[in-house]
Length: 255
Length: 232
Image 1 (tube, one colour):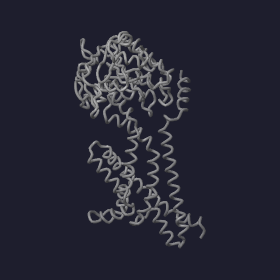
Image 2 (cartoon, helix red, strand yellow; image 1 turned 60 degrees about the vertical axis):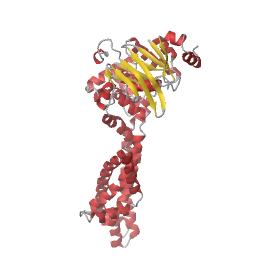
Image 3 (cartoon, rainbow over the protein chains, first blue to last red; image 1 turned 180 degrees about the vertical axis):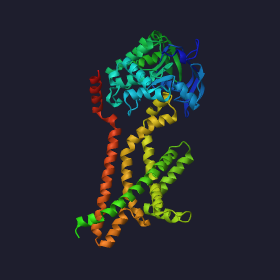
Image 4 (cartoon, rainbow over the protein chains, first blue to last red; image 1 turned 135 degrees about the horizontal axis):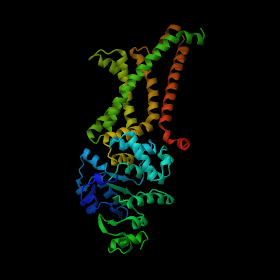
């Protein structure tokens, strides 16, 4: 049921980024990023706002087009050909800051629509999968509710279930708890931690240093368009070696 | 003759004319929706000259009176092809409404949050599937009240094709006025017919709107909850 059969074979990294450059007009946001993400690895991207964390994440599934460099996902080089891109995207789950559930569909329909349209699963198959995933995120009783009637935390858990329904080889999280009231952050992080401990490959843009410390295998600090520092969380978050790392931790009150 | 007996006496003629007005409006609105969707697509195109084309079309249609458009199409087309008044009228009304409908459709699509489109695309859904399952249904929901408004305007505007000889509702009331010498009564009678049509249309649009906005009603969740608990 996991991603084994949908990824590349062997010890290939799930994501391989080489020399990623991204410019918006004359502003260069990312300036030559190299990054590999191994299967089962949880990588947290942290850094000051405007450092390009979200942009880097959005480049991985082609929501942003890179200006230079190369991206490989599951051993496949990413191109912007529509068919190819749709195929790659169906194997990469993405969770957004603002949930982005389809407001005109029930929770169950939200989870079923791409299973039906993209994977060609039968209605019964999609529904069973939806219920199994909703149970897993503790929301099976909300299957027939509309997103507007759910709390932010519940909406984000549904969004995670929607992404997981595609049996992704990789999950991308773009500040998944930043739009949530403080008391709702925990329920979403719990689901994400469970996912991490089950061996899902994850790239997470986050400001939740507690999550980075508890769940990340590696923390990558982005600053000024490049990787300022990376390593195990206890190293990067407690004893940063770079000046940029120390300055960032001071800003967020960790050091 | 009093109002009631005149109303009854002319009812068969007006009912026949109601059918003409309704079919004329319906045909023109179907054509206008198709053309309007096309113009909206041009207006949202990434290709600048196509956007200019859409702007020019909308500007031309909105900048000239409907009655002028009806006459130009009726007499102008006569050089090329002899169209029955019904089709000349339907074409003119379609041409006129398509510009307004194009603007309504464009605004509807532009009101769909970008994040929802991105969510659909990030699930691997193609452009077309995203359009079909996410963008179009949401655009329809936001534009339905405005579209309904445009449909109501179209029903009433169809009275102008009386001037190219179509015996629709308004023309029927003119005939009635001429033969009864009671213009006031005749126009009050036709006003009642228009009012009735618009009321029914409003009711239809409101029903559809209520059905499509289930997701905005908090009680739906409560009901669903009761149902699922009952099933357990």
